[in-house]
Structure formats: structure tokens, C-alpha cells
Image (cartoon, rainbow, N blue to C red; front, side, top):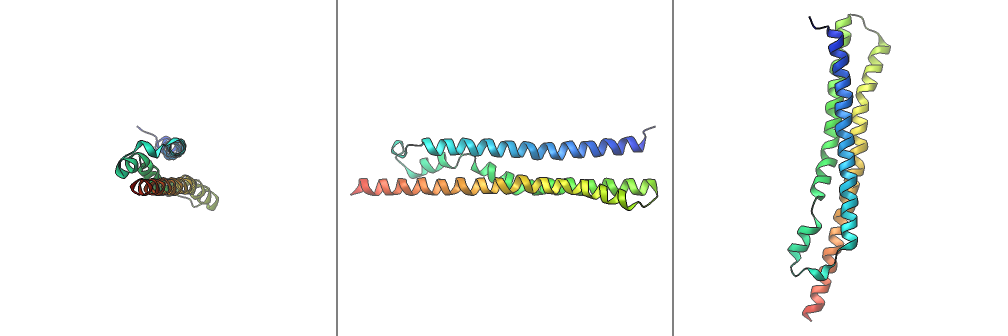
Length: 151
């Protein structure tokens, strides 16, 4: 027979490592893509492009992923919080006693997933905004160069 306490401990560990692991992975991917984009933007030569659309396609590679991470990280954190609260309440219901310290500890540990989701999302959205602004600047420079060539 499966011991319910062992199952709950496993669920807590899986939640902790699973949600936090996903959020850490999202953070690493965001940082990696942001650095890659900044390196690309600093080395781009607009003279190599004949059409604005080709330039825009190259400039916007992978910034959608940064945006998606920034948008979804809070939801991953919220999922971890909801699951953590469910585990806390289930544990309290199984024990049959109400201990305020145990409740508060369980809820605080569950809320760390939401905090981590926000810690991942805020820099990701900032990175996306910076990358998008760089794209706009390079495209504007391209337009200026093209206009000068037409004269």
C-alpha cells in the first residue's frame, strides 16, 4: 500500500524542482537569446540587405521567444503556487488538525513560485522591449540609407 505522506512529500519535491526548474530554464533561455540578439545587432551591416523585409526577418529572429517567456513565466509560477496551496490544504486535511504555523509555512513556500515567475518575467519583458527598440532603430537607419541612395 502506498503511504500518502510519502506521496505528498514526493509531490512537494516534484513541484518545487519541476516548477523552479522550468522557470530557471526559461530564465537561461531568455538571457542566452538576449545576448545573441545584442551581438547580432552590433555586428549587422545594413548594406548587405536589398529589401527591408529581409532585414526585418533577420532582426526579429528569436525575439518572439523572449516575449513568450516573459508572457508565460508568471503563469508557470502561478501554477506552482496553486499546486503548492492544494498540497498544503490536502496535507492539513489529512492530518486533521489546524496548525497556523504549518499553514503559513506551506502558503509561503507555495508563493515562492509566483515570485520566481515574476523574477523571470520582468527581465524577459525588459529584454524584449530593448530588442524591439534595437530592431526599430536598425530599420530606421536602413530606411534613411535607402532614401539617400534614391536621391
